[in-house]
Amino acid sequence: MRALFLLLLLANLLFAAWVHWVAPPRVTTAGRATPSATDASDIRLLREAQPTDEPAAVQSGSAALDLTDAALNCVSAGPYLERPLAAQAEARIQRLGFAVRLRESRDNVRAGDWVRVEDLATPEDAANALAQLQAAGIADAYVLTEEAPATVISLGVFADRARAEQVAIIARMAGFEPRTVERLRESEVFWLDIDRQASGGLPSLEQLGGDDPARLPAIELRRCPAPEDATPVP
Image (tube, rainbow, N blue to C red):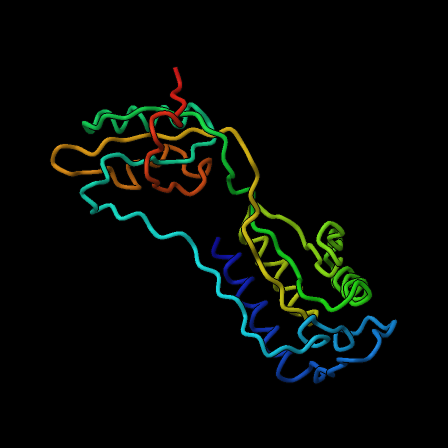
């Protein structure tokens, strides 16, 4: 891990030096046809091709669960991808004195970090960017044809966050600004519905983790579903 950290640090330093002393200045090409050359300075972003004064939308996530809410009598912990891991956590929580029920569900879970280059102005810009990214060493890059109008390039989905960061660094050194988003997939998972103790206590996230954290996604807490929506595991 130390060697990987030093490698990523060195790559970032080299990129910073390249930007300041080697990289040519970008040329704004808004309003011109995309040239056939694959120079990153000739590849337009969507904001360059279509100037707008509208402010960017602000995305907001769901509110965090307030564990101090006295009306919150039950929390769901999960998701557990494998029943044995959920059963281990269930037994551990029961030994702590909590009433807990194992529940099966079908939910979206993390598949990995998806590295993307977005907001290219036209499919022609995307094709030129793809050629440059592949030449930089990202052989698995491809244009997402299902995301009209084909102006987004996928650089790969990586379960290892360090690998995702390496690919993002290569894309930056090629002159792009990649974006990393969480890739989800629908899967059968297990949740633990845990009743709050009479004293008001709830288990900690550390107590909810399995014996092998590497096999678990990030454990989260949710409000328990209504009884008619829950599917207990026999």
